[in-house]
Amino acid sequence: MDKFVIEGGKKLSGSVKISGAKNSSLAIMPAALLNNGLNSFTNIPEVNDIYTMIKLLKHLGVESSFENGNLSLNTSKIISQDAPYEHVKKMRASIYVLGPLLSKYGYAKVSMPGGCAWGPRPVNLHIESMKKLGAEIELKDGYIIATAKRLNGAPIHFDVASVGATGNAMMAAALAKGNTLITNAAIEPEITLLAKYLEKMGARIQGIGTNKLEIEGVDELMPAKINNISDRIEAGTLLIAGAITKSKIEIEVDEIDNLNAVITKLKDSGARVEVLANKVSIDAENLEIGSVDVATSVFPGFPTDMQAQWTAYMIFGNGTSTITDNIYSDRFMHVPELVRLGANIQIVKNSAVVKGVKKLQGAKVMSTDLRASASLVLAGLAAQGETEVLRIYHLDRGYQRIEEKLKQLGASITRAATAEF
Image (tube, rainbow, N blue to C red; front, side, top):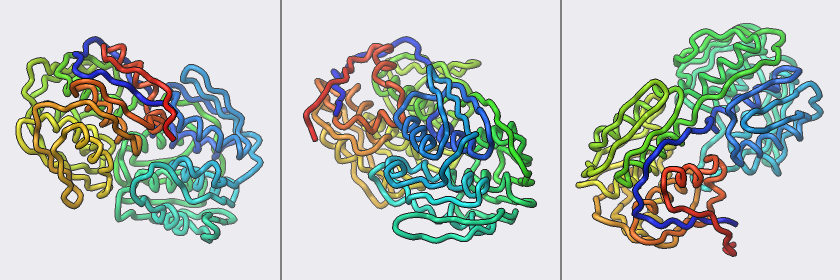
């Protein structure tokens, strides 16, 4: 088991390229199950969640090749529609195989998903949307067992705009008979990319990028190629790394509009942010960090996946800030670890109330989930002395060698083995 050893207080400088997005990759990869043949993806990040999905797809019969961000998936020899617990337990995004398997093969047996250690994230919206399309669903021994001779298009309305459920419903509806109307659909960039990939396969989708999707089912989908989008969460994390260390850095990133919510808040805190064609620079030298409230919401609002990182940044604010998570009310497992470094944070319901402090002191802290881990790294970069961040396998799930990117910017961060169990 590895850890990061960080010597804090170093100024950062230079430029770094942002990797492809993990979350969008995990949506488009299972969509390949809807066709028979060779599918190609570029700009796929080399992170553990991708390898976990590849292993799950291999169990189903998908042949794969993955090198230097180029991923090929051959779906011409599917041998199983059973996604077992041993694969699904590692990652909640495994639920994405439900819709494609059911729609293409008329049957799917998918273990209830696992993943990060925080909070319940129910799959009821996924299940209900499959039922709306005509599937029979049985929950047995920890599995979702779904059957249907052929799905039929139907109206689907989400009371909550769920990214995962929207993706599953869209994939299932692509091969359903007739028309499906999805209202209050998620409009996150990851869902937009999935819709574009389905279109490349031959799916008929109206309203891409809006919360109203109209899908006319087709009888067959063909293999396709698509380029993945940049990881907006990695981009936001590294911009905050520049801000929290009061440095001047630049990131190379595509789809910059996907970062608007984070960039706006950084400007509100006093940082100077400049946006160019495919680059964003942040200048926080001599910055007195302003305390800025944040409330997470669905896209295009401030992402819940940036909440922990913003909390770490606000530790150094010149007043009091309130960070409210309206997506996952219990996503604050990073707070006790940040307090170990000297932060002044209190949890009130679904909010973290942060009173700014002048300094943090390095210490041993423990990662509990992916984005919480990122917040600890950010705090360690700005703390005085040495910080050890334990259990960084969480980070490896979603950030492609983040320590190398930070080193490239001048951070003192080292990956080391630890005997901790």
